[in-house]
Image 1 (cartoon, rainbow, N blue to C red):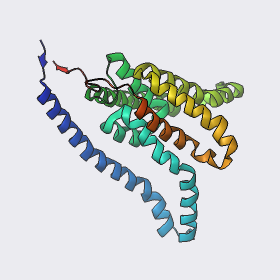
Image 2 (cartoon, rainbow, N blue to C red):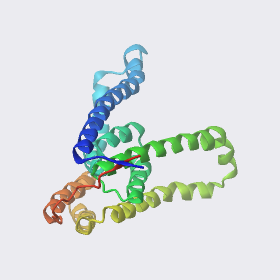
Image 3 (cartoon, rainbow, N blue to C red):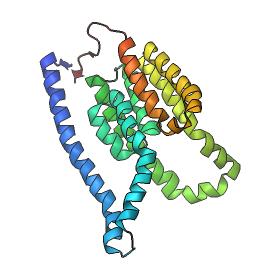
Image 4 (tube, rainbow, N blue to C red):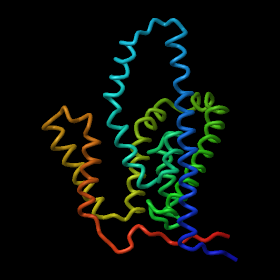
Length: 244
């Protein structure tokens, strides 16, 4: 026997869920930031390493120049699929594009939930919890217990092939899964055309834009996709969930 939640109950419940996850998400992210910086700050200020402020700012500028685009692109890319609660999980855990995002997409596809809806957000949260648990168990078994032995028995040629091709294969699967799950033909075509033009036309003409090519593709696709999107009455609504 199931009890069906009404529209106002669902809205109120999701509102409370988002407020709670946002509050604890901010706290855990701040805690993670403090712990991650504690070691380097101790070494800089108390270990007498001779690191100057100029060296710190120079190193930060070098890192920021390389990864600044990713800092902007990743939240814009992941949020529509994961939702606010899962974003805190994802950026705390890491390996978003090759582990957590595929898990969320497969979970949403399996239950027929659209990304960006309350049901899709809850599916992403549970999928990320499962992916993180599997990751920890597999790390303990295949790295902590069997890591040295596996490295000794796997031929170096096999290891090199895996190192080269595993990431492209995972990313390719993620892209196909996203296309199948989202079913946004216009956005898919726009993204493909923009990526091809930027990669094979814009970057060769202006090589200095190579570092920001990903950001250009993402932002351009977002803008064009917004104008050419299919407008439907009631779009973005999801089925009312049932509670056992």
